[in-house]
Image (cartoon, rainbow, N blue to C red; front, side, top):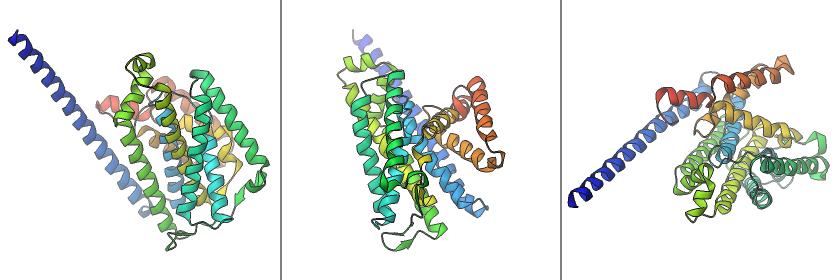
Length: 333
């Protein structure tokens, strides 16, 4: 009996040691990838890359990471995340231009409004799954779109233009491209690290358990709807943070930000980069924004090219760019 107990204890300790070693390996790999990403953000302006382009990439990368938190780690496909992205952009732009708030307060207000909107939408949609959840979020997003079109403070089809970047904390003039770039980079990196912390926290592990087998997670005593609702609010708030930041970068909030096609773009970014990966949405957003920027002269053909690339990736790289790269290197990215 003692021998059996001893053997069981040895097996458990060996398993725990192997799991700890794996976790440490994942942490080292992702730490190295993060350092490379930071190095690219630092070097890009020095190498002549247009700062506004890089800031757009960072805003959409944060948006895609926020969306990936829902689809990749909870398994809920939202077709309405543009309502949080664009809604926060309108609130932030209005607060900065009309109310004269400083940029950090305008962005904070837009993020807070997106989080509140996510809480309300979550109450209505979170108890549904699959196509029903997707259609509810799409319908509610369309309501926000038509509200943005008709509301007097949004500027209708013209949007809110000439949004002042202002002075950060009343001291740092964000009309300086370098200052604005650093500000956006800090927001992106902070949001990225926060999402990673959520994913690898006990809360994130419960979310993944719900994604894999919701009935079993419920049988273990977890309130699945509550966990999904919290994740939805976090995702909405971070999407709002991305939208509010973008409004200050381009000094504009427009109907494009709340249009259904924006929700489609973030789905494409996430799937292209790698669903359920940490760095996948960043790569997916970079690829899509780069195509839109450098192929703009092709007009409507950009959409066709995006569609063709998406089809190729679905057929050949089912796990996305980072998903396939991670499988090739046998590393979790």
